[in-house]
Image 1 (cartoon, rainbow, N blue to C red):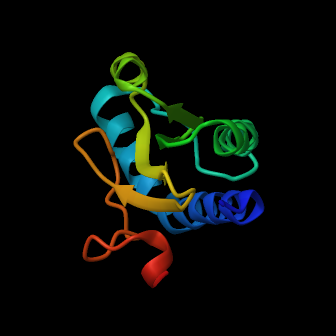
Image 2 (image 1 turned 30 degrees about the vertical axis):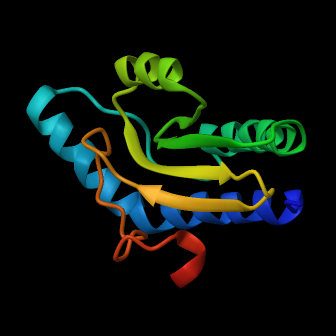
Image 3 (image 1 turned 180 degrees about the horizontal axis):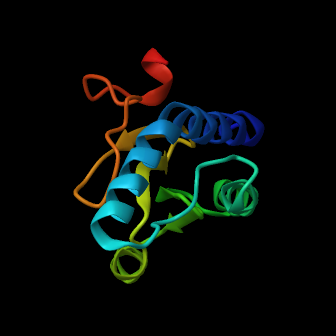
Length: 143
């Protein structure tokens, strides 16, 4: 059976690590966007910002998923102004059209045995290169 507390702590640590390691990279993206467009993009990264409150909400729903769903895979998108939990293709499509400040993504998966795994991933929507991804290994196997 999955340990909810350990899962939530791991998720929070992943987001905190991402924010602390990538704040400077995001500022460079913001500066370049401002120079090119005359407008600012997103906000500076901080766990004290919208990101912190969104993370609390996402962790509450993750705990509910762990308790109530037999299996699932949720994607979590780290944005400059918060986070988004993506539970299905419809969520993914709708949110991809809305947000222009996606910085990093990871998945949380619960299998039929109740095991929880975490995986960072990147796609063309991610605006910074995630230094926490190394050789395609999962977060908890090398960090």
